[in-house]
Image (cartoon, rainbow, N blue to C red; front, side, top):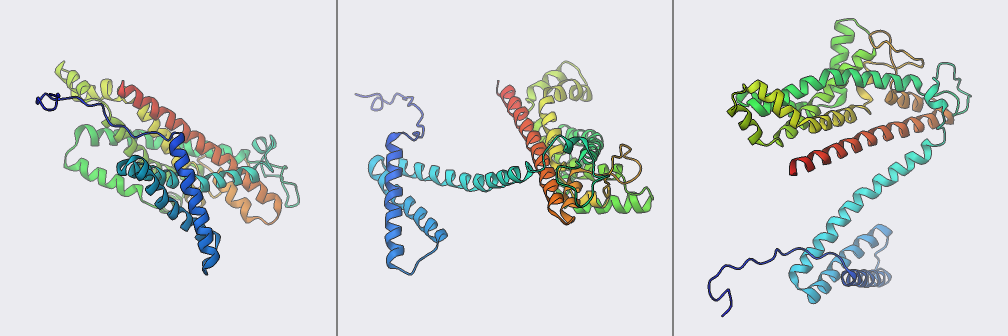
Amino acid sequence: MTALDSGVPVSLPPRRPRRFGAKEVQQAATAAGASVLGVAALFAVTPLSGALGFVIVAYVGFLAVYGVVAARADGELAARDRLARVMVATAALATFIPLLFVLGYVLTKGLEALSASFFSETLEAVGPLDPATTGGARHALIGTLEQVAIATVLSVPLGVMTAVYINEYGGQLARIVRFLVDAMSGIPSIVAGLFIFTFWVLQLGRGFSGMAAGLALAVLMLPTVTRTSEEMLKLVPGGLREASLALGAPEWRTVMRVVLPAARTGLITAVVLGIARVAGETAPLLLTAFGSDSVNTDPLNEPQSALPLFIYQQIRNPGEAPIARAWTGALVLVVMVLALFTLARVLGTGRRKATDG
């Protein structure tokens, strides 16, 4: 009599999907070859034509043939699992390949005018006939750093405090605040620029400046910091709050001394994501910073340049040299944003490992 016949519960090992081994690779290669040959014969005897159509029909045929081969070899359940894997991998590849082409194209075009002078010189004395390696974006890099710093100083405290209120206190008002934050996340960037242009530049008469640009970027950065900080605060175990309250600590001290330190890495991730969100914005800067060819370190007075504005203004100029400088500026901007997202990813991974541990 077996354990199942005696009624004794049996602990079976968990069923895990099999990885692609030599057998699975051989099945996939066989199915792909059969599909390509079959579709080639079909296109030869029918009016069907076109490379895109060939690829689509061949892929559908590959899925059909591979599903039949896998089902006959290992059963229907394994065939479904492998087909799902193939389709998910195809979707990921279809997303990654265009991104890879874009990054490769920007890298190829941007290296043409990349030199040390790009980071140390400005466009103040550059003429229309000067080569692409003459002049640089020092003024734009300084403007970007100052404007993003202003946006960070303004939006991070407000975003974190709003996230604390939504997650730790709750209530009807918290639901309304969360709805407003979600609505702000969908606001086009040009709307933020128009708002600051109307209020700061026109109504207050402060003129175009880096401060106006920083205010517009802060409006865009605030919902990103708030929503990401809220999600990070949710990862803090509730037992920490309960232990602090059980020891007699008031709620505000529990938030300050227990919750926020526990979510420190996640909050840093929220800040980095917010900075990456606004670092490449151009539309609001057109209405606030306005742009300049010289260095302006005072964000409160006079127009100020930024790297997105530098790219936009160079594209508008005729000639090959300005276009080459624009591609170099785009390369630098892409590298900056990728570095920020990579940093956020690393910090987020560290936060999850600490939480799981």
